[in-house]
Structure formats: C-alpha cells, structure tokens
Length: 231
Image (cartoon, rainbow, N blue to C red; front, side, top):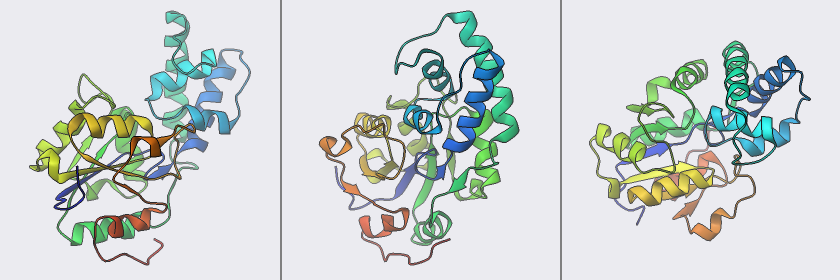
C-alpha cells in the first residue's frame, strides 16, 4: 500500500477530527449517576473511546474493555447515555487545530473526502454540523449505517465506492487500532494521528504508511504543499 496516487481520504471522527472526550464523559457520567453508580474520570473515558457508543457504555458499566454488562442494565444505561449526549454533544467538543484549513487544502487539490466513524448516525451528523464540517464530506458512514463497523472492511469499501475511488487510491486517517484494522482489511493505506484516543496501543507496530503528528501535517504526508493555517 502506498500514499502515491491518493484520490480520496477517509477520516475517523472522535480523536481525529474532533476532541470529543469532554462531552462523552459528561454523558457517560450522567448515565452512571442516573443508575446510582460512581462517575468515572474523563481520562479513563477517553481511553474507552473508539468502538462506538454502545461499547463505551459497556466499558463504563464493567470497567473492562470487552466485557458485556447484564442486558437490561446495558439497555437502561444506553437510554440514559443517549439522552445526556444528545443534550451536550457540542458543549465542550472542539476541532483539533488546523482541521478546517487542512480539509480545504485537500479539497483544493481535488481529493474526495469522507468520514468513517463508529459513532452512531444520530450523533455523527449533529457533531459534524455543530463543528461546521458536514459540507466537506462526500460520504459519511456512521457506526450503524451498515451491518458492520470498523475494524471491518465494509464501511471503508462502502465509503470509497460512494466516492467512486478504488481502495488502493484511498487513504484512511485515524487515531486508533480500529482504524488501522479497517484500513488494512480494505486494502487502504493508513495515516496515524497520535494525538487522539488510542488507549496506548502500539499503532507504530502496525506500520502505518505515515504519521501526522498534527492534522496540518496531512498534506505533507500526501506529498502536497503543507498548510500553515491554524483554523
């Protein structure tokens, strides 16, 4: 896989385009308190982001990465989380530096842009609109758009197909192991942004094609003239 000949770029959302941990923490802890449970630190909740809202809530209930709570409790917690997050999803969520300017530069170079996230569609659209990003993307694939989520290849292939670009000319930009796995499964190159939510996983061991320490570094990774804006 190579970054040369890139025609489309797909982005993860949480931890790549937006720093959403503060609002997710508010929603998770609101749900926990509604269920008479102790709140969890924002830093720990940040470590749990990346596999969708349902898994995030499960981690908050169990304290474990992949354990499933008792089904009734899980459903009640999800209902409370959904209510809290709908009310606060853009309160403290912020774009990472340079996101708007860099998206504009990539688009100006003729690249097709898309989002592939494990976040449910009912939250993905509102967050993108609140951040002023929705119009940049030719496709938005949420965690419940298809019957599969990252690290499955299906969302990636669907996004590339919608943009009319083959997988080998598509690059995934993300922060977590789910993004790497999805890119590899779909036959796409991967650019890692280490500032996001990766739970300390050794992403470099997966040999991404490039590392963008800042979002503004993406044009350089793709061999384009780098932006110096901090929008």
